[in-house]
Image (tube, rainbow, N blue to C red; front, side, top):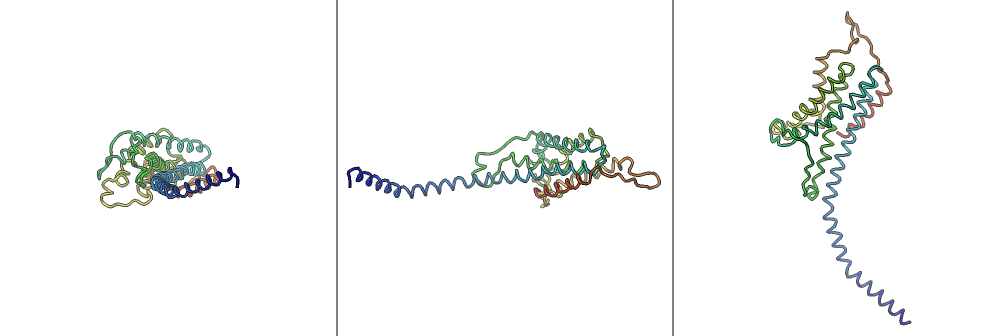
Length: 258
């Protein structure tokens, strides 16, 4: 064996010895790294679940728009689409300005929270305990429910109300009515203290939207031209049954986000 070959062999053996000695240290560092990142991973996935659920429920807005556009007469299709886009924008603004904190901030068994702007309030340890989530993802998840309640009213009052009165009512519904009754249970209010259980928004979202829609229908009455003197009923065929069918399937899919 040459002198160069002998040095190469010794260098290789020394390298193997160093790797063998450092292997336990590498394993320990990897274990510590996993221990530190596991809660952060849970934080990420909790946030992701909120976003996925929110995306599905937001997709329902398209379902409501298509269903309503397909069931109203052709002359009112543009109006229904405008209402559905506008109500979502109003719901987002009102829930940001007053709704979220009115529903969740400082309820403490009472009837409503504080009147203030929503702001990101993620503590430094939120990702460390493995049970937290980004507050912005929760806000997004909640605001799409607010818009859903307003969409229920939009469908019921189709061809019965003009645009601006409906939008003014949407301001009241999404900024005051929905957050206050939501605070009673989801916000830890008096209904929550009594042990009331709301399943998948059946009361907070659907019942609130349904009662508001019923009151609107009672106040406004039937669609103009629907009934004639003598008790007769006029058929008011929709503009597109395929469009209404598409909207139904979109809503069907979106309900998995509840």
